[in-house]
Image (cartoon, rainbow, N blue to C red):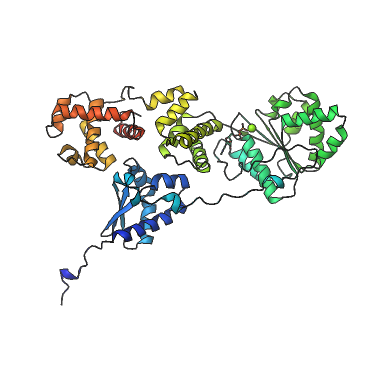
Length: 487
Ligand code: ADP
Ligand code: MG
């Protein structure tokens, strides 16, 4: 007998419950591979819509996430899907906005994947400081692990790592300098924390120049200079922050010089920070030359990639689920220092917690305008009034909208009135009107001869929604970028 058609099995269709289990399995495999904030952002409300032969159809709730998935997660998702369901050979995406409304179809990722445990660092009581020595508690918030390394701080970070592994050895003293908010205190404390983790009994003193000065003054007024010096000799690691404030304080400088020498000779580690290099601090020459004897590393302004990485790390730390495009927007516009980045993010957290407002490009632009960090930011995002860079063509617009919303050009032009087609059609009309110098009548003709009032209504509807729907604003920005009418 020759084989007949009947021996070919029909396409396997998994039951709805099975497909749900498959998708949960896929998510479980993906979760450890993707930073948490991104995982939540991009996989929230997703679902497997079905298995068509060997093609897994993945549903995405947001049109804007399609490109991101295609670019970043397709290969990973396919691999995870093959592991979960070996018959899968292909993954395709389908935007299904109803997933967002009908939450039960996706998974509650927060429930499914509760926060992983944070690394534990020694708490307050474990910091050993002899009586009479004021040391700030090292904050467990600052670690080497959550410090993001880029070209702007690579040398400083490497030096701190070396010091953390072998304190008192090669880089002594270690002198870090850089402008405000670039991570000096973070690195100083992280180094202290790292040493403490290795040597829980070490006496690590982290002090600000201000605290140190106050102690010297107190010792002088109480005539207890000798005990003060003796006590400081017991220190294993002395970390002193912001020594630019030693300028013009001759007596404190002198005491510091003695302490410094004593510790240095005992091969105890000294770590110092300032806002400028030693030679520019205008300190006693002897002190300056001591500082220059060791390792000097600077911290400069982080570049875009580093800023973005820092934002992602901070968002994760604050458990703020924030869209990548929003983080990118912050990284593009907040360029001064890391503290500024963090400040904006904190405001976003507050907004989220107090008003339940999910951060959007627009809300962030508002925050930034308020903080007066970048007065142009708002104008730029909301800048639909800015003149287009070039004229669009009908084809450009239709193809961009079609790709973006996964709707065919034919459908948009055609008669369908389902929501999935209706909204992209309105958006296409809006973009055509805005970026091409053509009449409503002409646009109507392009859409199967629709009446010009239909086109007017569509354009007005989109314009109206723009004021209340930041998501739409963002989608339009992406589309305009795609079409090439804005940068
Ligand atoms: P400085 O002491 O230089 O003024 P800080 O160390 O106080 O700056 O840094 C300001 C904020 O920015 C801190 O919250 C710190 O955690 C954060 N920060 C700075 N640089 C980085 C980095 N590279 N990675 C992660 N966080 C950073
Ligand atoms: Mg500081």
